[in-house]
Length: 282
Image 1 (spheres, rainbow, N blue to C red):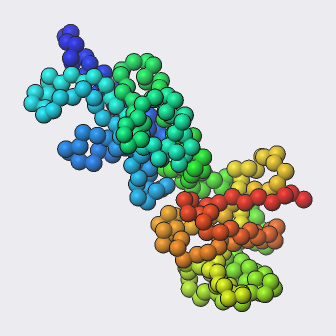
Image 2 (image 1 turned 90 degrees about the horizontal axis):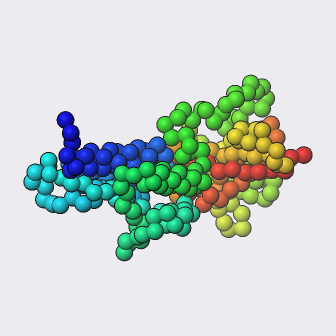
Image 3 (image 1 turned 90 degrees about the vertical axis):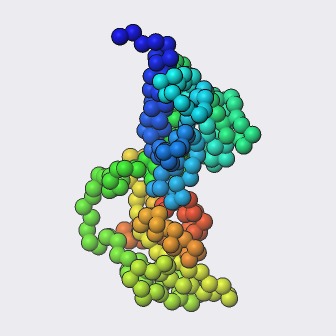
């Protein structure tokens, strides 16, 4: 059976919308159709990175005349993608995407009308790749490991002796002793899973301190950098972060093997639950 022109266009444009959704899904964005009445597919930041599931863009058909009475007569013309300008600025990709799309609306959402052509399909892939690069830069391994067992970051696994294994209670004691030696008055929490472990006071000021493991970041194991790269996983997950974030002033990491510690302000963890720290190699 020979397809007429309208059916042919409808099929290809519909396929294009699915392709573009797939491109954005493949870079770990969430694809959502909010309701049966919705005509726009939403692009969302996944909950693993943003508990609010922030919308950063939309995808919809163009050329549709409403209301639809006879669906068989639909003549779809293009797929329009819109991306939120302030989000693109947050991931430092606004100019790069604008140079490709070259159009925006009054609310500073960048936009483009994609047709079913080789050039436009390549363009959609390029936009998705740019977004992925920005998301990786902003969220790091939290972005790259969405949907993957997080223990993959611990590979290759090492067998370590008990003498250098991390012990939470001992780490809190060590940090407390360091603070006392520096003239702080210290009290330690007796709770099993407290929001913070130590309350330190000096000169009329107090600070709430969360103690965590200052561990090697094995992503840099083969690195030729002249310094050791550590990481501090301050929170178990983003729900844990949301509960504790406003009740902590500093996160202190301790490494028993190196007898080293790092102190970071809680502001370093506002948008992520882990942070990197470096120390010159001896």
